[in-house]
Image (cartoon, rainbow, N blue to C red; front, side):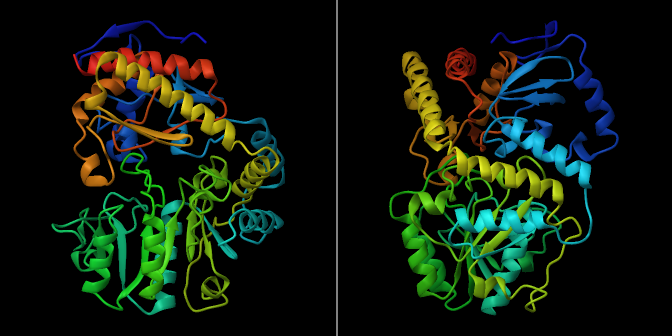
Length: 449
């Protein structure tokens, strides 16, 4: 499919072009006077890659269209929800029906029950579930539940693992293998950050050291079973099993953050793929079919500690919103009827193979590392292997920025940050993937020029 463009002109910034008459630029100017950085979420500002963001007018299938009329092949996919591409018909129809009935009630609906039935069927470790409105809300609530259930204060997370912007998780690693967290943002009290210990991902010895340093003090280990917020970093063989063993031995809960991997890498998420059952799971993204949603769930004895049954409090006016529930039911029913995972893996494998061919043809194999798991992948501008965040941070983010803008100029929208994953959907055709790989080769030439 040809890329549709508005007339363009060159700007300062190697390899970048902007529309001659840019509605996006005008909107961004207005937005910056009204919203911090002109955006509702920081990564959208393009701060990591430079330049100004384009504003989306519409999307369908594997493409988004900006307010200047330019169409892009989309590998951001709203950072994960669009497993079947933008605006699939079954979600659109479900939302139309739901909107006619009302948008929010402040009272229970059958839709919550129906989606809960589907979640517990697909993810066997979840015996009970609580719906919320975002992944951040889900992880914050799971942390409170873990502390309430165990009577312990401390948490463990992996360096580079992202569990939303809750104070307990917005921490950075200090020096050493297993260290007290330090506040990763102003506004996070150092005293609270110090209750989170940060360990490298894929490092069993560091986790053992953390448990030895604070015996009997950890409520939970929070882990992305497939790390996808430091770029894609899959778990090494035996790592997740070792984490499960250690948490059980030390009386801590294992919480899998499957906001990205849930329903993406398998119908039952990464825990199905790797055969590891956590105590609690957090979900989002695909669960809401593109609408704001989150959920946390797990063992019945833990979930029954939540109010109104138990003493651990959490509430939300829009939790279980009927529009999000309707979209989620439609998504999970489609997954159950026509599991997309073989097709998604084949598409991911094709894109990986084509990208590796372009990289090899240009002699860049020793300067790049390509990681893929199913329909998730990241091209690191770093020599491999990349097993944790410290190794991911060796990436040349300046070259990635040039690559990003070169791909954008050629009509391909990638995540505007090195430490994010690309998302392939069933809507991406083989021709789309071949085109993307060819354009990536041209853009790599620009990045390494």
